[in-house]
Image 1: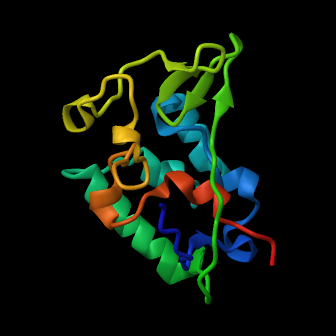
Image 2 (image 1 turned 60 degrees about the horizontal axis):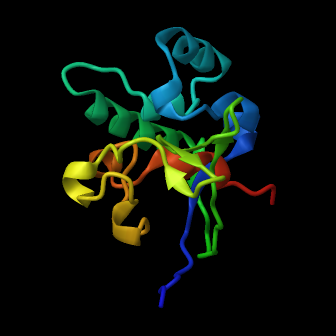
Length: 160
């Protein structure tokens, strides 16, 4: 049985960060350098800056510092009370395949079409995290860089 707990989510404060359309981005692994530049021109708080970080010598440390700075500036805020936040994220390509974070899935056959990028850890080339994506998923590799995953940031928002 799943143990579902409410959390104090981090999300954009649109009063400071601006429109969500200006701070959200496609999945990091489909963004080319030109698109990254365009996204950052929309807003200095565009999530692409932490999802697809730049910086020497360690881009992930730079992403962590940027993330912390956004919180200090108030562009990213934490909910005052714990709440439940349902989250799904998919993209349907022109061929009808679903793009789930960083893998293609064919809904007609119920099969992943690409190998799990973390197969060395999961041991399951076409499964997903041992059937437990809650405990075994860090698709953008940033979890350890700044102790959170920014991949869900575009959905962790509500208008109140």
